[in-house]
Picture 1 (tube, rainbow, N blue to C red):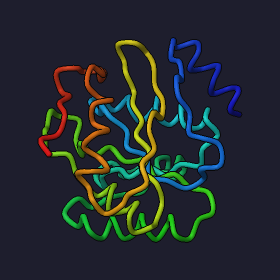
Picture 2: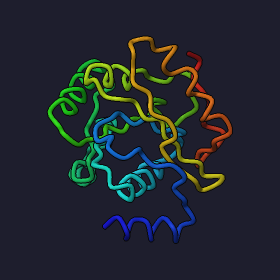
Picture 3: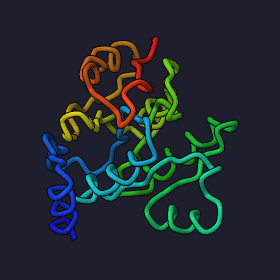
Amino acid sequence: MAGFYNWILNQAGWKITHRAPEGVERFVLVIAPHTSMWDFVWGWLILKAMHLRVKFLIKKEMFWWPVGPVLRGLGGIPVDRSQGSQSVHEATEALLKATRLVIAVTPEGTRARTTRWKKGFYRIALGADVPVAFGYLDYKSRSCGIVRIVCPTGNFEQDVLPVLELYAGKSGRHPDRFSLPDW
């Protein structure tokens, strides 16, 4: 099926510029910018084209009938944003039990403009002892990819802050809704 997904992406003008390194089977994937519902559609196709087994953290409000069963079938995991630590625990447990799994997270936590990115992705990776991969969707260039992998050391600032530069200049579907975090 990966060939079919690549064909769809090619027809839509998307190009995958960077892929996950060979042999990295379990990780947390940070995806930004997140400004549209289309990010899920393109992100899902892109990650399937990369042959990755992916689960997505999605706010529980999206799991209404008949969308909920479809989202679960595509790998969606409902997140109760008022219970953040529980979601982190569940995602960590899923990674600990799996031999091959990617948990995709949009740390912005919203499609609206925000500088308050969530840090749960880091806690998940640290708890499951897996790397954090940083990926992007750039609607302006129609390019996407996983550009950096970091093994968390417990020092968030040292591990994550230098990586944020890769998102500068990236455009979401709605560029005015994207901003870097104020960490």
